[in-house]
Length: 84
Length: 217
Image (cartoon, rainbow over all chains, first blue to last red; front, side):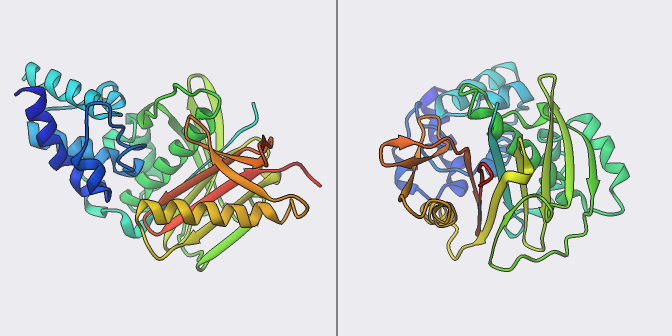
């Protein structure tokens, strides 16, 4: 998958956890999950679990820590998919 | 280091079955914390335990983040080592509570992170879990409010208004405002001057909470 394809799919993963649909529609790799999309930190684990299911990957603690913005989420997902 | 951190969890906004899923809670709890649960299993359901520990970890993170801007929240690395107190979630604060001190925060949680130890204080009501951390709990001012709408803008506006109202009772001669620092935590201002009052906000679902530390007057 290309980074753009992962980003398009990631939008669907993030969708249930943000009420700011306008910000979600306009996300870039620099978009911060908490600051820009206003996702509550209590939902960050949900996003990691949903990403694991969607891409059939396992995200360890250290990788999960890095998933603070869209670009780093794509980094982790593409790294883990490459390991599969 | 003088700081304050807090967290709130709206129990109605939690997916209880998902929290108990063996794929979910190991993202929050370390192996030793999962073992620690066995001592409390008769008193607290697993999902409530997970979110109690989450709120303690989040409060520690927010307490530290003020002075360590690059710190990343890594819940499994803040390790809870001991919990004491009254867990039965029977306390009900109603729609709004503002308190000074920790007498109503009946749960004490010890944790370690990067070779430092922290003591957080929590309460569980029928509706929410709230946790606080500061350097002197006798000087801690905290509040919890139930709000009508659970979107970010409503939460943000509500917690700011709630904290401003309570802070203003101590600054009757000078109007204070609350601004957001570049790191993201709230700061108390008098005009263009920041006041040395550590302040922390939390919101989740239909609940918001503030915490600040004041000198004794």
